[in-house]
Image (tube, rainbow, N blue to C red; front, side, top):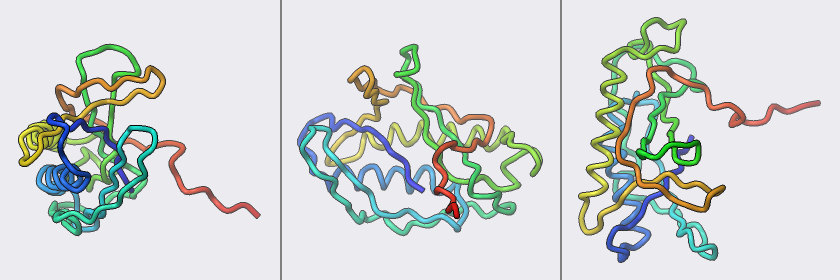
Length: 180
């Protein structure tokens, strides 16, 4: 699985490696404690949105960081905890969300439902807001997360994170099923 994010280098002087390490470090410290050890942080791809740069795949210092949440049994990988990135601007093009990893039975109210527990929602919201602060204050570069709208051609700065109370399935993202 992968998460695609748009970040701005506030000073405009960071290298691709510094951007990758800042985001991966924040992810490892803030989100990986909510994931089971079935998940590990992989490589980080960085692409400048200048229309000509190619993707750089970087193995960060946080790569291979395992999840450390050790309670409950893993739910199917098709379900995901979701974090909403709020911008303070109304409209579909200014709302962002990231599908993270599958919750465990301990993070939902019942294994048959997709409702997250209050503690899981709080932990997810806290992790998201801590991630925003961490990447904005990382040194040697500071990053701001944004919601990118290709339709409008704008990026809107994220001001807040909110854990979604329901585990979701990211439709149309499954691997295609072989047809005979």
